[in-house]
Image (cartoon, rainbow, N blue to C red; front, side):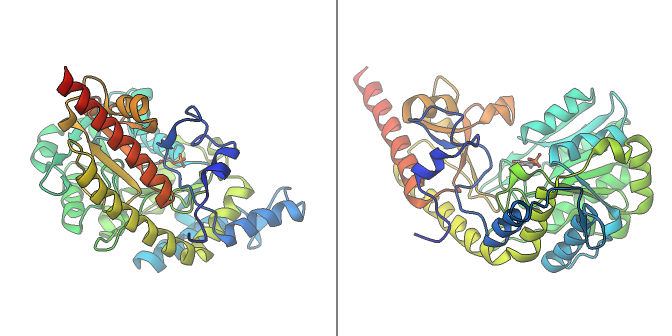
Length: 396
Ligand SMILES: Cc1ncc(COP(=O)(O)O)c(C=O)c1O
């Protein structure tokens, strides 16, 4: 056992969605949350607010509390990626999905096209559809050992009203970490067609060894000037309930233009719990994350070995980042969506592939950020379900 693994009894005793959405006989492996204890600096920061009864209107660093998130973001970008950012160009918000909707509203009109690599995190579609923009889908190609961007298809799909690229890097659900060459190619296309790039980098702290995250906004000043980076500490430090995220604009001009359409006041602000938890995460919790990431990489490799050995008909490319495995179950030739099959037959509750792209019902996304024993129990159940099915088909 490590210091951060949590057992099933404790996980089921809490009130959050992951362990309560499905019936108690199901092991959940869906929403992007980890079954791990919080980093101590975060626990202490949140406890201090309550212990000191310090939940009034907050100040931090002698000013408006949310500004302190901007300075923590800049420190983090510098220390992780050597990227110089100006805290004044950061707009804190409550969550990243809000940070997806707002730039679309600010930088495009109804009917304008938005490029999205698919399969994709469902709220990206929700933002494009709700705001009556056009989805310009750029399906990722299933390559030999990873998913790849189809640049020819991308170029061909861009029309005169294609205004934005919604980039997700590292990519959810495939776990791809796009290389500098790939990002530069996207950048070239964005410049050629005068497109704004919204780069969701929420998973950028969760990159496995051998891969490197490069912030899109850091590629060059001219790309920075058209990039809104959206990120938060909530995935990598496991605090999504605290509600705090940031939008970073490459220039003051870009930020001003954004606020012409989206007044600051309408964005609200993160709560002091989110602000203090985020600062404690980014400034003081890296040692915790180092240990957790090593555990996740080992879980990923273990899952790959066990899927190859025990789940015939299921394959996946090892994710380069994130704790999600995008399982291709097409070899099982199921007559129902893969998520439904494993929920009903194995009592393992993954995320449904078709919610990331209607063409992917034969995929399911498995969250492996849990203790090794729970992960093994999931795989055992899935392997037994596949074996039972094989036996009943042979008998038929
Ligand atoms: C790519 C991506 N963006 C955004 C989010 C959600 O962020 P928030 O809870 O801050 O809205 C997630 C959560 O899984 C995600 O995977």
